[in-house]
Image 1 (tube, one colour):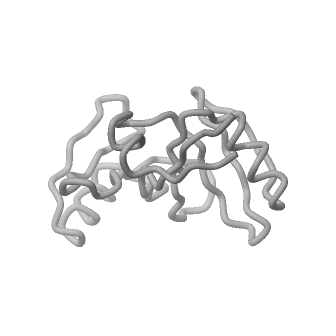
Image 2 (tube, rainbow, N blue to C red):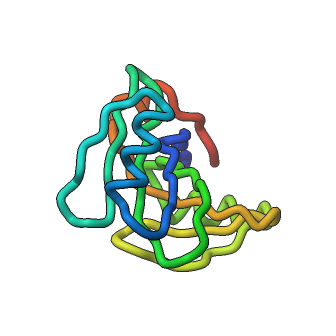
Length: 124
């Protein structure tokens, strides 16, 4: 059975004051910010088919990670594991993975199922 995957979002992980970090990244990237109201996430506006942008408060070292949208997280986890990635954890229905290069990324459900069907790449 096939499934689809595409780059869904770019997540800027930060420590400290989330509002201050969001103000900086909003101005630096020329994007409006929207506090998600939970004290952990601020969304930054995206244009058209661009990936979504999020500033996220974290406990670990600051970094940027990618969210890969897929219509079958389990199948995509197996496919990427066969390529050398490893599963790190599962949080809120997301699968946190680490590439062989040490880069973390998340497998998430589609933010826009129609965009995934239109723009996603197909994998077995």
